[in-house]
Amino acid sequence: MASGLSGAVSWMFYYLALNGGAVGTVQAVAKLGFLVTLFFSRVVYKEKIGKRILIGYAVIIIGVLILLF
Image (cartoon, rainbow, N blue to C red; front, side):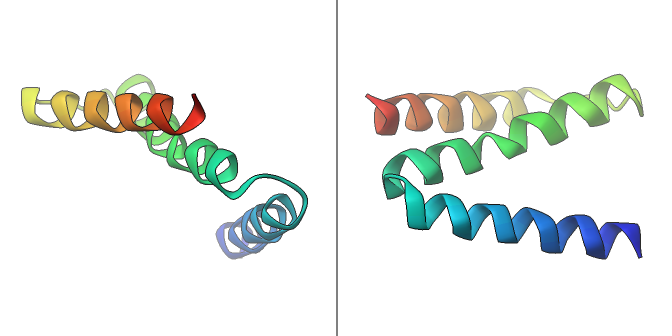
């Protein structure tokens, strides 16, 4: 139940941000959520992160930075 509620609240804030801000900026910040997931899985669950995953996340970060500037 908590997962569904947090997902609903997350989407509500996402749509509110889209209505009030620049779409490119909102999309860029939303893509950074993957980094939070990666960090959480590494720190809390001690998952090993392979080289391909790190390269993929580096590409995402570079893309987000390009969108922001």
